[in-house]
Length: 102
Image (cartoon, rainbow, N blue to C red; front, side, top):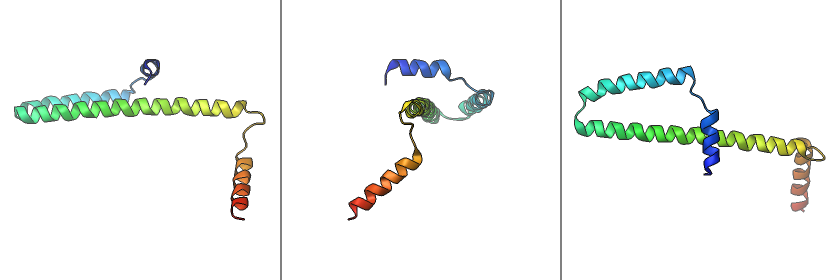
């Protein structure tokens, strides 16, 4: 993925107060678990948390890119001459289906 899209994502994505609160709670629970788990279980838990962080980052980036694609699609539709018409598209599809069935 182009680095500029990642940079845009980082610039315009901010953590909500709820997300910050959840992160702090997760860290608190993790600290409690570290003292109770053996070394092998801690390694597995930390690996799981790393995967969770990677997944969350990827989902966030995918969502950001979907928003950009949506905005671009809307902009293209608004600039079309004549303007895009959902009804016209449906009629055209119905015409194509009826002609294909003959």
